[in-house]
Image (cartoon, rainbow, N blue to C red; front, side):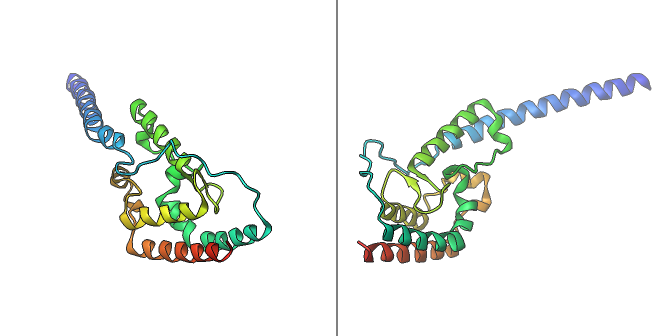
Length: 184
């Protein structure tokens, strides 16, 4: 009887090892290619010159404050779920981000995403473009559903953009652009 228990335990360990090894193979076969295709279709022009740094006039601060208040109230909750994991300092670490190859790919993607557009400090966002162009870019990404990338949505179903999200973002962007246009 004792020998039977030992053999059962050895078999269990053996099968656990095989299963975990097969899971790792499956992980690398399926997940790594998806991660490597991040931002597919989303081009970031690194050769573009940054806009000149200028003094922000007092009335611009008021305009940005007005736009930011609306952002915080209606849009930031959407972005926190859909965008912040790559486009902010509030990145969550998931179980798969501990794998060496995957970890380096994720870090690279997040670095690139934050260089393009960083939501960490609210509106106006940190980016390589003007606030107006950022707003247009955000709306295009939502309407065309190019963000979040497909591979991210596979692992994070809550990040999928809904028609209601698009409606709210579109309204905010259009109102914000209108406010910015009036003050030029």
